[in-house]
Length: 419
Image (spheres, rainbow, N blue to C red):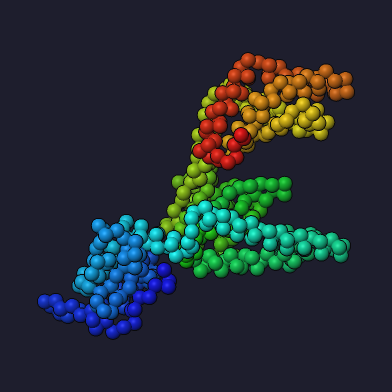
């Protein structure tokens, strides 16, 4: 709403209102408010109409229903004696907030919802394609010249991090992200643990809102090898914010999983951050909460624990050897899947594959168990898995869990489900 003409530079002579004690006029102070944290913010929604000598709310005037008209939409507001309380009451009302959201949505772009989604998707695809082109160009340039990619360090910004990271100009990207966040002022942080082959253990994602109301989510950085203690993660996060020029006092939202070192109310990361900035509200990950419900439900039944252990053993047995995997592939159309501690859709995929390829998997195990080319330990493992799958209880559990997890996963990750 930055383009709304407010007409607050006039002398307000037409706003004269005579009271018993004195004569009052509209003033410039009405067009700004002081927040609880001391920040002064412009009232972009307020406009002064000189011909009437009154102020109006632009979003409510445009989108408010006629049955809900008030002083800011009808003849205009001009009770300057009670202006402060009335303005605060109006801007905090549901009526005003709803109309502001309509105003912002209409101001961004016209068109149907699907058109806007397609446009957003195309922009995302174009953005990442451009990044991919640049990365490929750097790789080709270094490879053609026979130059080394890696340096003595893999830290972004380190002068000894090698030709690839040095040429990628990742610092410029971080500076742009930092500039956007500083412009938006307030931001939220998502911290998650994603250990990979190089043992980089934490990633940080930042969320903020642009002036047009668009919610932006950007990856900030990986934070390597900081441990799992809440205080260590807190120190690393604070250092990351400082290095990127972000003020911890503008931190408004925390989002982590439900592990005690992150969500603990006495010594968790969210508590440590709120000690520094009480306005940084913590919102636990809903998907992780629901995932914990499923995990605890499974762990409370011994038969269920044994069943999922068998699924994982089956996956490990075939994937540990390319020869075994080839034997399985020759007999099945679906590939068996590994379990996951955080994604229930992976459990559904594992159950689904086993149910649909039940006979083919048993046949592959039987072939390996009877093969003279295999080692005795391999015979033993194949025979043991074959016996487990031939139990009636296992067959029943495959069908039951496949259906149950299918329904359960719909609430977590519907698009990840198998057909």
